[in-house]
Length: 418
Image (cartoon, rainbow, N blue to C red; front, side):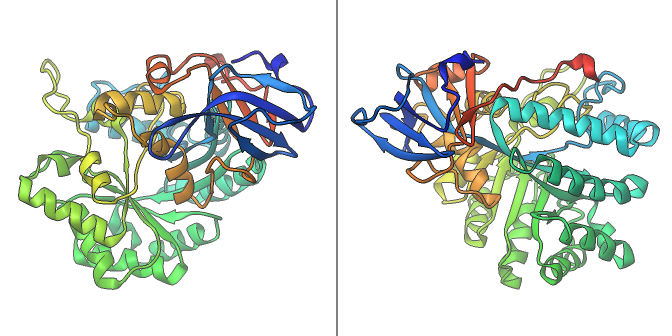
């Protein structure tokens, strides 16, 4: 963390000689006047004011970040229930075992709180978590997340998604899940969709519930390398056929990259036409996909982010799982996510506006406007880096987090607390 003594303990000051990233990826040297928890002005020239000055010497200033796809109810169980072999099936079995053995309300609250403290300390202001919505845990976790939304209000905007197989939306169970989601601010209906279970019956029921209860959709889609068809295309076709107007976000979409080229182009166009957003989870997908003990992985498991972006599709990156059987590492740090995404998905040469994929774009999808401009809330992250190369090279370098105009003294909690 940067030295907090550099920042005045009042509501008005100047961040002088900051580097701001623009939407096109250009870097601008600017001065920011902070007053009353907001950005009062942004100027090229040093402002004529007697306010205290924090000299940044070109340090990069971003809006606070947004992590739009996480699994906080699973997080930080690695030490007690690791993945035995690093495979997808190993992860499923380990999480099922841990859920049955340990997931009391207090256990889940403690781990979710730990995760949110990590995110907050790293400079994240919005988090969306998928919640396993089955059995006893499914009935307990939704009241818990509503309680945590209230506890974290003003620090992190917390949203939630029901994570179930699509057949769970049949009958009374589906009604109950939809009611829980609809009674939770900012929540979405979700499902795990693959090419073989994205049937017309399942999707019609899911979309009908979403329309009836006024909930957007946030879906796990094609988290595999199956060729010959995708659930993603079926979802896009359903959106267009039903003229579905609520937001639809599809995560993972790994198998898109292994379809034949004409089919890939057709799917990408369908996604763009349907207005679907895409979130890629490169760290988790590289960890799980194409893992065979004793053999080198032969593909990255990352969806076609460049082609989707070029087609006008909103593309985002997120943490996904954190220190649990689905991903053994991670710390809810969007600077790390960005750094890894750059390497894995080649978001460089040039960097362009990809910095927005972990900040402005997911925040907008979650209902927040975090554009750096006069009048915006002064919720900022100040990196020691002066350009994108420096940031990607040292994503864990010291940074300062500004919330409501004030530097916060927050540090990621010690693992010893778990």
